[in-house]
Image 1 (cartoon, helix red, strand yellow):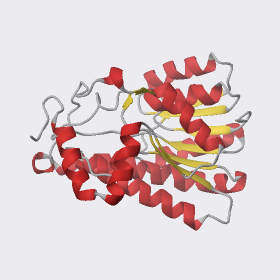
Image 2: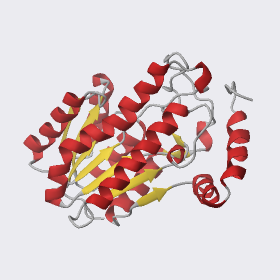
Image 3: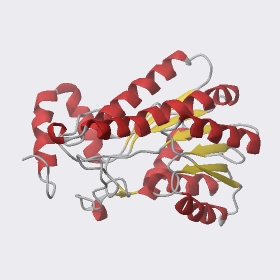
Image 4: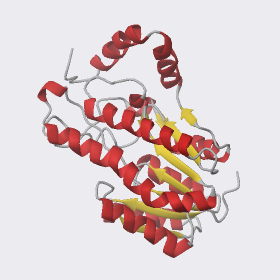
Length: 270
């Protein structure tokens, strides 16, 4: 994998998979542009990446705001003169049944997970077409199979899939690479920051994070998929099995997903 001097833009880069991706590409000589909402955590993550000897710039960015996304892309181009890889990683989750969920919670998830991807992609696309680079969406198995208690999350990821797949087809003769990466359950803080039915942060993970794939391992898989210019990447045995079985036995998988998610501590449904 030769990413030396490639300019890589990563949203949601202050923690979890985003930070691990920044570390992974920095270790291979890439130039990194890091974005996240929390400026303090972003600066801490940037210091770690700079410790690897990489060229790094960062910009506090709320991807739900179009102007922030434009400023991020402008910063990347003004600093490094190009964009080779755009990784749309910023995202939030939720845990509540739709019946009890305030609609603003759904809007917030769509604004960050879907519209954040659209905004960043819109401004990065001309530069990616020029470099024949890679456009990456960090999605989820929830983009293939609706997860109960995660209506807003699944909806945003289904929308992301449709958007990225369409872009791949539109630009198939222009050299653009589009990767939809679905890590499966990963040890990160996305469940700790998931929203409840009122839009409040739930504060703790309902799952055993210790049994999940690490963010660093996920980052290595994603880097390899980009190097090989793969269209799709689905990680973990559970994730691959869910996607495969859902193609042929969707009703059976409805029941299995319900049973699996209902076992979570304090599940909003039983």
